[in-house]
Each structure stands twice: as structure tokens, then as C-alpha cells.
Length: 486
Length: 95
Image (cartoon, rainbow over all chains, first blue to last red; front, side):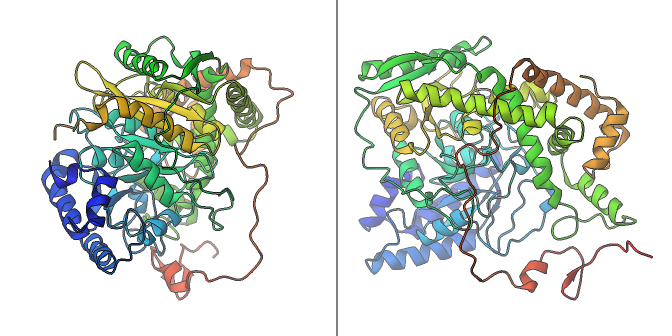
């Protein structure tokens, strides 16, 4: 077994026992990146110097018997949507090329304080808009399980780097499924925490009422440990919730006996890949065998979630992305005559086609004459979707569902058909609209060897229960132990 | 709902986006398809439903009104494509 094949907690154990140093672990990651990233293309930039300096500092703390946290010295990667002081941050866009933030995002600061060396910035769909990583302005990332396929998006770089063992864990963001779908596509664990659980301060905004950062790792216990570092109330983010952070590892091994788990019938719609459905149904039977009671539930407004999301998210995006105007940072159209032309040309040259499409859609939905019919109506339907979850959670402790109706698809397969691409998010979007937490755990493979994920959805701030439910399945199966052939 | 090229140009102006003629054409086709798909929301009766703008927080949480450190002007201007003294420089807009 290679050092980079270890989970975060396995490495932490070896670091604590003095069997390996953080510098050795960081160098192992850097060598692995050197060896496989020309194929996977997960990294936009590697911060070798910064990571090694952090690793040396971690080793010094370990030697002094004073580790900063349980994960002190475990190297991780960051989606390039998180501001990193002194290290270029582009959001996968040409419009931010060369932008060097003057500060860290709160979660980046928390990782540094906990002693985790940051290996660099990972590829993503431009401004987190996409489901395949193909809308990155730089290059697409490849799925380590089959390099002709997408690792999913928008946190596809984070997922691929974790699955390819280039990093021990990574941070992603999830606006409509962007942590869970790439986790499912790469046989990794991804958690979208409750909206407000993890600070959004310093995370480049896409759709502010939906965006939520979260951990991506190879095991459920690693996700719990990483969430432990990230989940804090942040006074710098007015949407950060002032709630207590529980001990996420405490109840991890308690099993599911006696739990009532809902199976929303709307999440098994026609058109689903039969192999994906078979893997998910197999997992459901496993939960029954483990002593959980499966309950048929209905979330009747699920069919409206896609339309609701594709009005609300672009509307918020059109507002958030107004700041990229060539004045304060990033790209500027040098040949513009006058201020209006400066704005229009800078944005024309700086944004890719998916971003332009969503800005246009959002601007249209917010414009005079259409606001009530589109944006306001979507916000009202969002209320109905949220109420569906509230009703379901009066009956059951959590919900089990598929993540994506399809297995990882080929690069280029859906890129020219936005609607078909958007449809792959159909089972992940409702969670973001309702603000509840959602987790993806590996639950099987197709005959072609492509990973399938199971989605666990829970009540707001009930991440500990989701982790416990996911761990119960993981303990019985070794899907998560299979390594991508790269 | 089919968007006309004229509507696409109007929205592009509002969004401060310069689009090429090919982009305008593609945008009209693709946005029309998405708008057709979202049309299903019109079938729901939402007359008595309150809108949700944030899922989990009822009120915005306000910080104490106290002074705290902020970025220096040099840090703020460090990424500016063009600057003049302690200001961002933009093309002249007043003759």
C-alpha cells in the first residue's frame, strides 16, 4: 500500500505515532501529482512551497507534543473557488486570471489553523456553474475511474484529486449538487452541510442563498473529521448559523437499528439508468437488513425543483457576477472606448458560454415584466419544496435516494445540450433549495466499473445522523476501499 | 416561450454583455428551451404561498457595530487593472 492510499485518519494516526512525518506525506502527494495529474488534470496550480512549509511547521508541532488538531499535518486540496491569501484564485474563469487575494476564506484560515498543508487549487466549472467540469475556462478534469469520462461538477477537480490519491481530502462547494454528484461519480464521500453550518466568507459567490462549502474525502469518518474543523459560527458571514458544533465522530458507529428512513418515490423516476437504480435499491435493502425501517414517502414538488433552481440560481448569479466589470480586479478589455464598452467587452471576453447563459437567464428572470412570473414564482415554489421536506421529516429520521439518474458520462456528451446537462442535477437540487444537509456515499459500481453514489438527506443541522447512516453502510461494504485505476 | 433576437439583445444590454451575432442566435435557441422547461411552474397555484429567499435563516444576523481592522488601500488596489494614486482608474466618462 502506498502512503497516499491511506485515509486522512489513518495518516493522522501514523503522524501521531511518529511513523511518518507530514513532510513525507506532503512529498508523497506532490510526487503522486507529478505522476498522475497530466492525465487527470485536477490541479489548476500546485503550491509546493507553501505546502512543504506548512508540513515542516506541523512536524515541529508534533515533535513538541503540541499538534494543532487531530488532522494536523494531513495534506488537502481546495477547489479554486476559495480565496487563498497570496495564491492566485480564478474560480475557473478567465475573468479572474491573475487575481491574488489579499485574504483567506474563513474555511481556509480554519484549515491552516488546524495545521493541514494546502497542496493547491483544484479545477472546477467556471464560477461553479456546471455538472461536468467542462465549463472550466482552462481544461476539463478527467474521471480517475475512466479518463474518457467526466468526474462530475462543479467540484470535479476536488473529487478527482481525492479519488486519484493526489490529496487526502479536499474542499468543494455545493450549490445544486456540486459536492455530492462528483463524489458519486468518483467513488468518494461528499457532504453538503446545512446552509449556514460552514462559513461562506471568502468563497467566491455563485448563488448566495444556495452555496455551501463542504468536505470531500475517501471515507465517512474522514468527512466527519474534516467537518469538525470547518463547522463554526463565523461573525464575518451574516448567514452563518450561531449553532453549537457537535462531536461528529461520537455517534458514527452507532448503526441504524430502529431508525426510520424515508424513500422518496419521486426520486426513482422514469429514465433512470437501470444499473444506477439497481445499486441504490441494493443499498436500500442493506439498510433494512441492518435494522432500519424503510418508509415510502412523497416529496410531491420534486418535479418542480429543476425549474425552480434554474430560475433562482441564475438570478442570484447575475447579481453576484455584476462585480466582474474590469475595474477592480481581473481581466480588463484594454481597447474599450468608454465605461459601458469596458464593462461589456471585459465580460464578453472574460466569461465562458455557460456563465453567459446563466447571467442572461438570471437577468431575464429579474427584469421588469418578468420578475413576478419567473423569479418571485420560483421563490414561492421553493417554499413548497422546503415544506415537502419538513413534512417528510415529521415521519422519518432521514431520506435515502439516488444522487444522479446516470453514471459518469463521457466528456463532450452533454456539453452542447444545456437542458440535458441540467437534468443530471435533478435529485440533488431540492436539498439546496430546502437548505438541508445531504451526503453522498459510495454504494456500488456499474458493469463497466463506474461508481454509483447513495444520497442521504437529513433535517437541518443533523449532519451527525447522516454520517452515522452512511457509516453503517460503509462498514458492511468495501466499495470505498476500491482504488481508481490510475 | 421563444425569445426573439431583439429580446436577447435587450437582456444582453441589461447584463452588460457584448454578444457576437452567433452568440445571440445560440442564446435565443438555448434560453428559449430553458424557458419552455421552466414554464411548468405556471401550473402551480402559489397565490397564498410566501416566497423563500433563504432556506434556514428567518432574520439576518447583525454584528456588533464596532470598528475592526480592514484591508489597506494598497491591498485593495493590488489587483486593479489600472489605478491612479489611491483610486481605481476607468475610462473618462465626462468631457
